[in-house]
Length: 115
Length: 113
Picture 1 (spheres, each protein chain N blue to C red):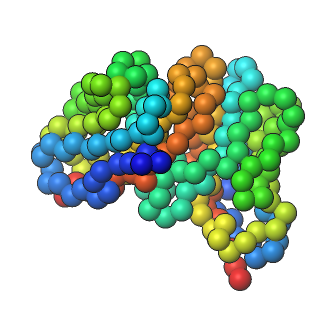
Picture 2 (cartoon, rainbow over the protein chains, first blue to last red; picture 1 turned 90 degrees about the horizontal axis):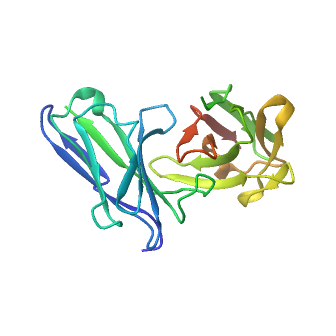
């Protein structure tokens, strides 16, 4: 497709379950970002990939969070043993090059609710 | 460290009135600055960006923003607001030494008919 695609749009899980969120970036985009957006807040950086390499994961809040992009295109954000504080919208963005001055194109996000 | 402050949590304007949304940033060098808009349940859409050069930048949907280094500001303006402009607006800064974007907490815009 023409834009960044995220699935599922909504995910409800019980506390302690594992979840996997998918991001399909714009074709050919080198850079891929994951953000967490809590209610009423701006997006907060989680992690960054350049092609298949995860160059920055400093924003991941705990070792329960894991992201991968094995073939340099689709990415998956996995959260293990989910907690209520993980409830948020998870946004994926991609940009065409590996420079920070490139605008990021965002998907519509996955709204995760942990019961 | 980079940071962005959007002092106004919520703004209400009448349709047809002018709009200014404030953004202040903290960054040691020349920043890359962006404004994004987010409608409910949607991702963020880029309105405009500033990298260098002319400090007044034009964006989509009739928006413009002015970079003022002396004030560390990048305020967003629109001369005449339309009802469809009601949304959440985010200012963001990116440094030239990394790939992180830092977003403000957003300003929610309500447009009164």
